[in-house]
Length: 392
Ligand SMILES: *Cc1c(COP(=O)(O)O)cnc(C)c1O
Image 1 (cartoon, rainbow, N blue to C red):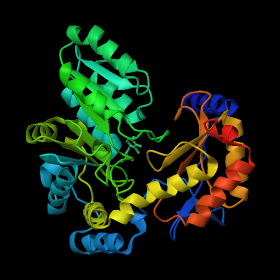
Image 2: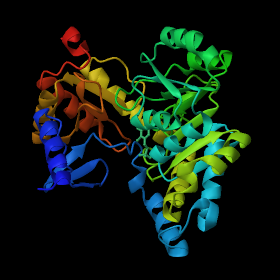
Image 3: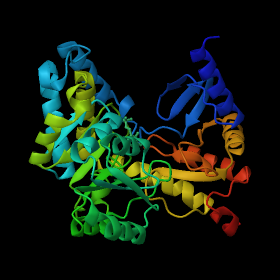
Image 4: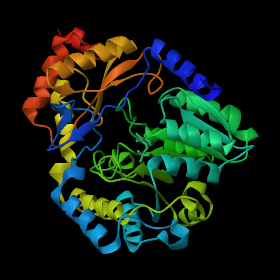
């Protein structure tokens, strides 16, 4: 074996020994919340397609029509010839939904964050980031070269203390947080973060990957408390509730124009295919015209938490903390035996000792399946945040 293969094999052995090996399992989706794995029909509670729009007939038809009219790929970077009119329309629609002056669409949410953050801050600047923020916010911070300090999850005292101590000795500053936390389902306290950010001249960026379409009446985490939170940088993805693919940033005209001129992952990456843009626009149409649709995932999540005596959910993501990686995999396997696909989430996706079942709810779930899953989890004796034990 040469040194390269030996390196990979040794690393893999360590990953396996820690119970953290991950294998890709081919999974076919649909219809509805159904999924097929290893030839086996399951009800999936592990999908981020919260409104099931990736399978919606209208979304599929408009993506197909875009392929017929414009082809499968976009052919170049947006700044060369890849700026399809559908992308221009999509950006206008996103800006309107998010109450922003303008928007820019990237190839994915991950590409958005690793492009936006290094465009705005660099050496000598400061980033304050929530400890549970998504990996791509951390990677964007790392690429920027700015000094990056972590504040305790949703802890405004910690954030304020760091701003007081560190802000004066740095040039520009950003505060990075998920709007809806991807592995915990809770919301960032934007009503507290935004005034703090303004007071210290720090630019707040929310990653709303799990917010758009499902919280704040479909407009995302900035709109949860009625009035729009003062977030100058609202980023997100088109690959979850929007049911397509791609990432975006909504901000002022000046900021968006600047990002189009500076973000490396925008400039040096090919534009989104026309079909992805058309699908996203169709999804935004459906979200805007159907209040019951955009409310549905949270209604299903509430049915589940009520059944288990858990606190009311703030989003369609409900974690059932198990603790160890091996126990989590065992719980996931036991649920699969009963016909439910609930993927176990292990470090490094979540902090050590907090491996969990991450249960996500979609508009496509039948109430009877939601209740059956809750009963199956209760039968496994998984207390989920301790509250099941209290209510028993
Ligand atoms: C999924 C996710 C991303 C990445 O978005 P993609 O479009 O899938 O690259 C970014 N941030 C958060 C919080 C996510 O959950």
